Image 1 (cartoon, each protein chain N blue to C red):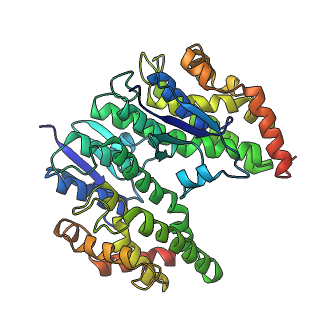
Image 2 (cartoon, rainbow over the protein chains, first blue to last red; image 1 turned 45 degrees about the vertical axis):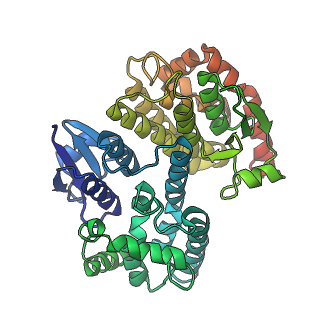
Length: 216
Length: 220
């Protein structure tokens, strides 16, 4: 069985997604922490196009981009499936994953903004998350139904990483009052043992978020 | 299957729509093409894509699939007995997904900036666009298509943008073939296939469309 290595960065939500998927599939792997201010030769060799983490290396074959890596993991280790079998259900799962990708500009605006800009960014995010809650999650416990799947994994950051950012910015978006079902989903998600044991301590996330804000 | 009802909600000039047309052509799927008015959106479009209200939308037996690359993957999986669009090996599939995603991240946005921006912003977009095409040329290597001997997922993601190159060149005042001859040779090779030539629009017509849009947005 070829060796699996993951090049990651401890606070990166993209890095965490891969860890969760590997753990859910029971895949043994070596984790390599990258110093993003001093990227290793290996990282630059394995991801010459973007020079970013996460990168999964299976044997000597590198895969970059977290969502591409997740689909690779799903196909290579089919135990404990994380996507539906039916083509239409798969297309819907991919649609909601892509919906999250489309929200990244709004998250960036929330991260960078202050005053009016921050208010507007919070409002935009609330609007998008409402659609996600109503049409994506609906009445399900998880996006994957009774258990989590790649859609849950793709939004997992909402439960801890985004919560830490909300605390650092002093603005709440994902609240029981405004997004009851999505808020409950986020709490349930981070309480799952496989997730809880594989995210940084909350205080460290807040400290990191505050450090980044001070730098900007 | 003979009983399949397939409709494509689309806009003739959309490279995203052309991706779906090309995938359907490769699979030999019969479908109804429905040209959409994006200024006065139809009730059907709003019903089939309530979240984004955009084209393309593939409606298969009443059920809508949205987002062009998601639609192409769906087509590959729903009509899996013919002309596979993605490779069977998981690592090769990952590489195909990576490069199709690269096309999505780079080609459309940079191309759009070329025909909507001016001055320094336009120059930066032109440079980024050429750099991206060069990276794609490197990935293509000596293969006839990104899919190898036959057209595949990355080809479907990329080649529709060729129909917009003339518009980019004319509004940006530069020559793509001079900088990326391999890319142009590749695109022309693709166009020799009937599935491609019948799925892609005439670049001159696309240019007229862009001129109309530029007037409309006050960019002239």
